[in-house]
Amino acid sequence: MPKTWRFAPHDAAAVRELSRTLRLPALVAQVLVARGHTSDSAASTFLQSSLMDLHDPDLMPNLSEAADRIVAAVKSGRRITIYGDYDVDGVTATSILWHCLRLANGTVDYYIPHRMEEGYGLNCDAMRQLHEEDPLRLVVTVDCGISSVVEAALAQELGLELIVTDHHEMAAELPPAACLVHPRLPGSQYPFGQLCGAGVAFKLAWGICQRLGDGKKASPSMREFLMSAVGLAAIGTVADCVPLVDENRAIVRYGLGSLVERCSLGMKALLQVSGLGDKKELGADDIGFTIGPRINAVGRLGQARLAVELLTTDNPERAIALAKYLDELNQQRQVVERKILKQAKEMVAENPAWQDSPALVLAHEEWHPGVIGIVASRVAEQFEKPAILISLSRQDRVGQGSGRTFARFDLHAGLSACAQHLTSFGGHQAAAGLKIDADRIDAFRADFCDHFSRTHEVIASDREVSIDAEVRLADLTHTAVMMLSKLGPFGRENPKPVFAAARCELAEPPRKMGEGERHLSLRLKHYGTVMRAVCFGAGDWADEIAAVGGPISVCFAPTINSFNGYEKVELRLIDWRADKTEPSRLAETVVGG
Image 1: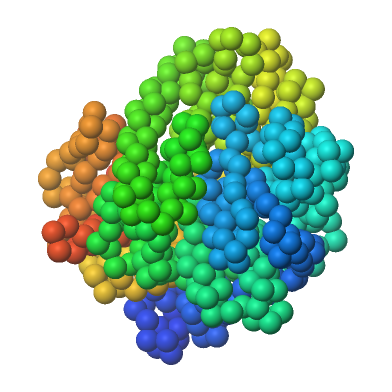
Image 2 (image 1 turned 120 degrees about the vertical axis):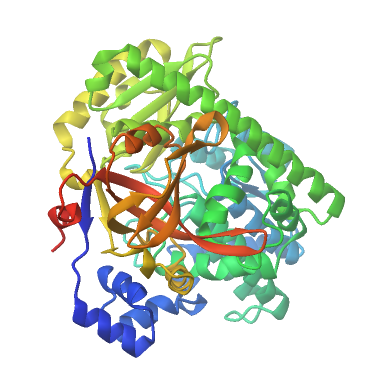
């Protein structure tokens, strides 16, 4: 179905006033006003977000107790094991706490479960192993554990002290750990509940540093550590797609600078092999599309411990070797991902009933369980419906599944409603994982689709593109687009500014580009101004646009393309439509207000 273009209301007077008082380009002022920052003070606060906006860590439920327990363990010489998750959030959270405890001269190690063999979160075999190796050790989870009721009960039975720190959705029953740290625990008064696992770990590290200082302020060395740790927290925050508002905005905004200014050996090597080593300033996109996927790839392919080692090593040669290996694994992951996506699309095409179903549940024996989550996201986006992809084991016929939502549907609640078919499941509203026996998949598919149909309705706004303003391409000067970047970091709940331009002409025929001609390149002419527009993964649009034979309207996010030291404005195309009548088609689609 075609997308609806929803334009933000345009308050010309407010835009002029904000532009004048804050000395901003009108384009930037329009975006601020469109997003609700209408007063000088509100706009200034948004633009000047800093670490001073972070809340006191002791406000988080049970963080004080957890920090006290950890400091006591450090001082008594007990072994502390950080039990992390294998994704970017878990890896960075593990690294933050490891650095903190090593700086405090603690005896610390980490345990990252194997994605395919052990699955997500705590597992009973790991609890028994950790207890057998050292029954006096303290186990601290990061980015997992809040739904591990059985595993926490086993730890309690064994006499293993367990602290759970997490941010995921909670079940009705909480795990019987010695201490639970979570920003949204029942009765929590913490001001911001949307931290990721690395954000929670950063707050815990902050609390530990305070206690190792004078109780309120960390020592100079600990403060320096926290200034560098916020960079790792920024990586986890962006990669986990939590809302980039409030504390998360401050963490990412400061953390992006910290990654450059206070770069560890491992991070420096990773930036170098991924082509970011010479950048003086990183953006959220650099994390989301370059750094994050390389850290994620090693976990998806079952070797997440190597990513933690990269972020914690003090050996330059080892750092370079690990960074190169992560880069190679990411290339392998991309090949596997493309193959799975192709197979998933073919399966839907071969099953007409699935094309019309409200949700997709696809299973295949050849799919790698570590990559299906990424593909599920692309399937959900392409078919505009929730998608669950399941990797089936040939040996025991047990499937590992990963799902992504569409149209605000609560995926975790959907799995809960169909729990009778599942061996286990977990996650949150937008993304979730599951285990299921192969012979239960068909029944699960039917019940899951039925639940979606009964409880959720896809409405027009679910297929909307939110547009900040209609512009002329001439408005998109280098200065204006550079100023727009100051509204970042961009991500969930603070997306990149999106604009539209009507009656654009083609300066030359559309071009397909890239491997397999998967991408689109256009040169658009608009009232004498010519700009390049690209759209990745939309090579099929080239023939459709060429067939229009007249002007088109486009919506896009402007960016600065740097090449060989030369910078120019370029458009990242989001959607387009043919202009078949003389008046601006955009005027017909303005539905803001």
